[in-house]
Image (cartoon, rainbow, N blue to C red):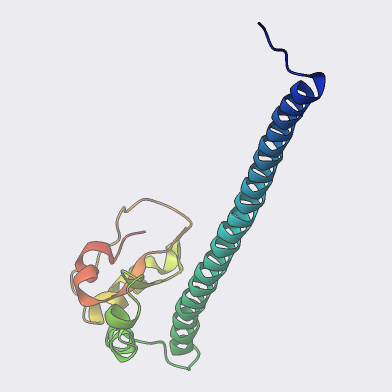
Amino acid sequence: MMQFRDSRAQGSVRGSYLIALGVLAMGLVLTALSYALTFKYQADSRRTKFNLYATEVAATLEARFDQYLAVLDSSAGLFTGSNPPHRADWQAFADAIALQVKYPGISSLQYLSYVRRPALDRFLAATRADEAPGFKLTPLEERAFYCPITYSAPRPTMQYVEGFD
């Protein structure tokens, strides 16, 4: 003989399945919500760290750039006196500021002279007399004016660049 469950018993089984599905759905919703919040806060944290690092790098670069500008400003001080500096003065300046040690980003510190064509021969004679007997203008072309590298420090760079226009 077959026994049937009464409708109340079948309803409670269906009800327990619905409750289980509801609990499962609620768990999935809470998991998705917690994942989304965690992901958002993690992304915000990474963005904040990146911005902080970028700010530090920018400040470091700006400070280094300011130091290099100070070198240029102080080298201009050599030319404010009544007598123009000589090659030895330029080298002494580079040695005094410890150019190669304190400023690794500067491969050479150069001074370019502005020379008009009529004054070129006088400029070359004066430069050769200033401890640079082999100084020559490169390339030697006819122009209204020239801007040759007249002084260069440190010493090893001098032979390669001085005289280059």
